[in-house]
Length: 324
Image (cartoon, rainbow, N blue to C red; front, top):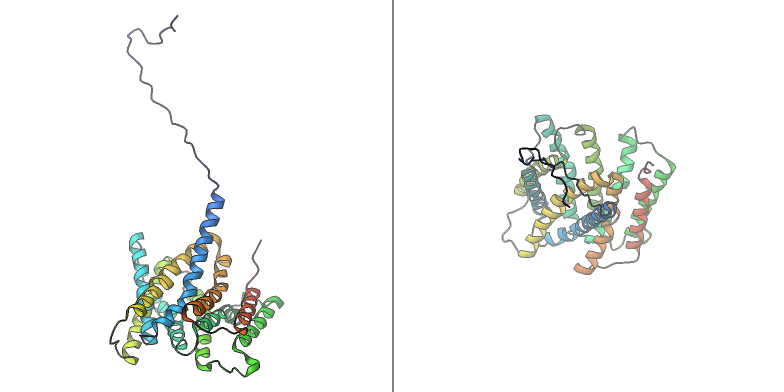
């Protein structure tokens, strides 16, 4: 027997509007995917910045140091401008902001990039990478003086002393610094000192500025490009040729080691926090030393890796403890 009809006497079918269909959400363990994703980018960033010192060394084989630094900031700015175009973001506005960016560009880009390039004319790229690892030590020492909210602790002071003991180990102080070019090493250490000075200045003057980190950095690199263009034009002759490998090294140094790397760093800071993101600094000298030895055939003595490990241990102690 068939079921009774539910149609009304007019036998016209009633159109029922379907209700909202339930959406099935598949959860594929997002925690593990996110963790793998940021760790992959963290490692890639360490490799990019670690190889930057090798790229500087290759670039200085055909170009003057100011020209290597100029190419670095130019291609870095170009890469970030492409990012801004795709995101439809604009550069920051305001004369005061650009005035502070001019000083920041000098301290964070023009001066250190030029100093590292000049340093690598006479020291190995591995030593330059280790000198770069002293930046957190300089930063802690300066913050105790310049930033009132940074209070010294026994742990951080011990880290500062340990770190500079590592520098003396790298340089072979017990041998009277024999075999180490004093001028090149001093330039590399001065370059690493520029970074914390620049970041303290940025923290004091540009902390509340209008503009995304990518926009601010792109503007900063544009200013640095103008500064280095003047310096290169005044102090160095124009290059007579453009050899393939040095040219590619400078392009990669700018587009990858400056533009893309900074963009990845901002993403890591947003995703995992500044404390974890800044730990990439501890891997840079390891990769720089490995690249210098394996690719460029630079000599490695026992005191170099031992001193680098001491520097990194001291730098780790100077960092503030992570809040629970």
